Amino acid sequence: MPTQTNKRNDLEQAIEQGIDFLHAMQLPSGAFRLSRSPHPLLEENCEPDYSPFPAALISHCLTFTKTKKVEEIVSKAIQFLLSEMQDGGVWRYTCSPNPDYLPPDVDDTACISFLLKQHGISLPDNTGVILANRASRGLFYTWVLPRLAWTTDTSFWRVALRQILKLRQLCWFFRVTECKPNDLDPVVNANVLYYLGERPETRPIIRILIQIIEHQDEETCDKYYGSRFTFYYFLSRNHAAGIRAFESMRDTIVTRIKSYAHRDGVIGSHILHTALAACALMDWSDHSTVLDDAIQAILHAMQPDGGWGKFPIYFSGRSKKMVWGSEEITTGFCLEALSRYRTLQGRSR
Image (tube, rainbow, N blue to C red; front, side, top):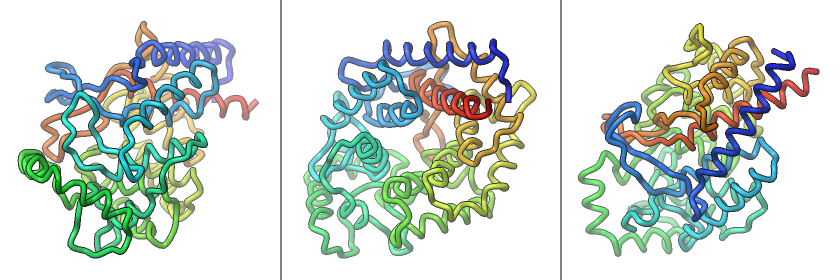
């Protein structure tokens, strides 16, 4: 692991500039910009989209960095997320000025709820809503909707039955998009596991995620997070959070991540993949030269304004006709990787 003074200074400077970038780019509401595009790398025909999800992702990434500006960024983001909470302590993917017709989903709800609880923010107990939104084999449906399976949890029905008021819009939405009412998405379930922790109701998630690795389906298992590196990132943070059932997968995951490393330090196809992979390697305590090189690649990719370029973080479905991302989201994950690596350097001295 490099410890030369100039490399430490480069790391410190990059983290400071990245934080300055996010501080300057955060919207007055506390949200962050988001772009969607039919171009696979968001290089043309980008349009703005509006969602609480980037604020949740970026705020989680910043929990590994402690500065006054980070506190300001996260505080504004949390206030924004609280303003977007719906009755029952749930969130939907879109927010104003987008139309309000999407149902709540367990992905946004789990990620935002985890963030709020991490920062000591109280919210209505939404575990009943999430636990009641499961399929017969134990995985959690992405969308919170009324279902034929009966549950006595009144909190679920209060949330789910509200969606009937938007039935016409929902039928149109599920007809014209690749989203379907019975979506069962492994990465979404990994985020539910991260929020709820290991318990009888979430053990089917663990089994499915392990099966995906055994069958080498990481790249195609989730139609929204259509990348092995997002899969590795969201699974690996569960291990780092204390879920040891994945321990037997450690060597397999680490080896597969390293197999996508290039000579220039980039892992995967671009720098967002690299940041996600670097974080996953640190979750598995793999402090190899592949990690060192990835960090250097991230440092070299920083733009003059202190941010990093936009790359896809999720997709419209398996066709990948539309992709979503932003400079701010990429910067968040790059900052997580750099900040965690800085901590490792401090421990190694």
